[in-house]
Image (cartoon, rainbow, N blue to C red; front, side, top):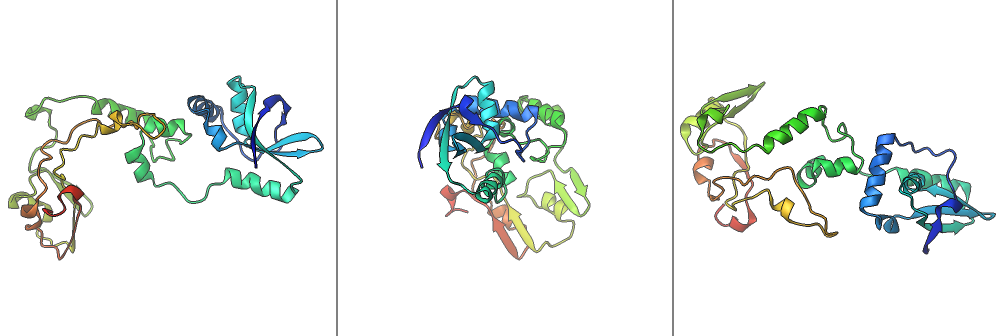
Length: 256
């Protein structure tokens, strides 16, 4: 099948399109096409030619967005002699995705602005209060002076409890803090994700580019302090657990 540029004015949109789009979503679609117009070459409009009529059955919203952007032509794949059942099947398949997103990966590898521009809603991303997230973003950009205790809300030795869960602020290599956390209990499993000893700097995503030349981008920009240690034997030795699951950096696998 060949992709060809077709005048938008010659295309007939689907009258009973089962796919709806809000005004806000249309604006985001317009921005997406404007930022990456070549995307349509990879996902062209699907058209059925019948008695000289070019009937669009997949890509109606993209055509509407292209019109708003003032485009005159759009990439299409035109086929003939398609059955009504096949067309209806393709309409549903074009608008129905299989599988689901791993939202943990999305949160770590994409910034929120990019996901919103792609059409995700705050609710889909598990964000119930967007104003709160924006407030947290502003707080992330604030830089506190080091070694100023008055800036700290949580102090060493503080314990946070949520039902049966306990979090202790302290040094995991010292018995006094580990004992506070365990509270005379012996967990079956110990899972650790300590600093990897790689001097990690989260700002790398803002300095690196994707394959398409656009920056990866990230909300996190801070460097991890004291990330110069990979051997946490002193911590693991304090655990009474029989099973230990330990994350570590591949660079220091031998030491870990």
